[in-house]
Length: 208
Image (cartoon, rainbow, N blue to C red):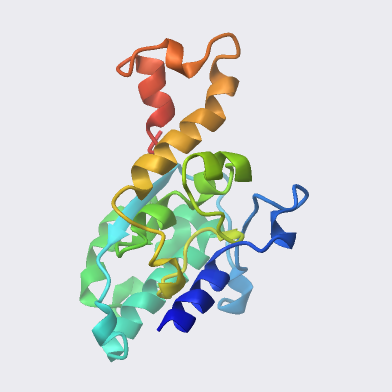
């Protein structure tokens, strides 16, 4: 068991070579060309919105329905360049699991589907997480993960399990705030303001 945990940690964390300033932090995406022959792009991409999607428990991952749920999330997110045109790829949703029928009501929305499992807080904020320098992550007791992927695919990532806990979101909020604060106010340190100061609240709110 301990050997497995060590292997999972190695799969999750950036190696010494990957932590070089020339390549870390980093963010990548996977081309939709692996799944689709072509992807239309709207003249103007709609504002992105995140929707958390319940996913099957690990014990039923081999079930056909669970597989369809994961494939739907993966294919939908892979079409990120299509933005609000994504629904046109899904044949009126006849072949999708029934829990995705509601998407028909949001044909003009640029939605990203976030698997609502243990790693949801990481998956939702991957673009922000992988803006934060290594030293800032260490200061806030956060792991230096390997290069991030956005939008997230829905394949379960058990290697992250030991790192995503109830304190993860708060630590990420504090780390991002400390990183972005000098860009907001170069003249004053963040600790000079009260915790309910509006600009300080904004810096800590990952949703903004």
